[in-house]
Amino acid sequence: MGAELLVPAQAEADDVVLSWEGEDVLAVRLPQLSESLDHILAAMERRHGMPLAELDRKAKQETVRLLEARGAFAVRHGVETVAGALGVSRFTVYNYLNRETALSREKAAKGE
Image: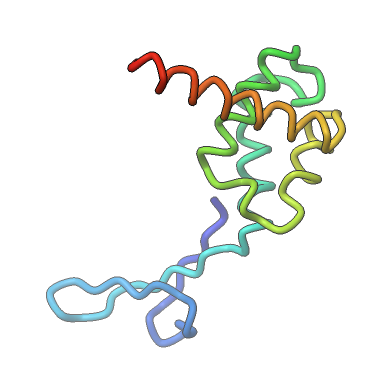
């Protein structure tokens, strides 16, 4: 996800310091969330073996579902970033998200 490993002395307030047997041994600097989204999108393209914009509609819907589960839409401009990567409009991404919500409610109502 693009994290950076540091010696504990270089750790800043937002970094995660890992300790072993009471001694700080490593610090991890996590990337900004927007950078993480770019990493996630690149990994999904590698997994599919093609740009996300070339996926069929069903695969794009599944991609949106996976991205939602990973918190991609909590990132500022997340919908816009994903829409650009998928080659669709923001409206389409919102439709995919609403579709998933409706399906989840339907399954819950059926007791699945």
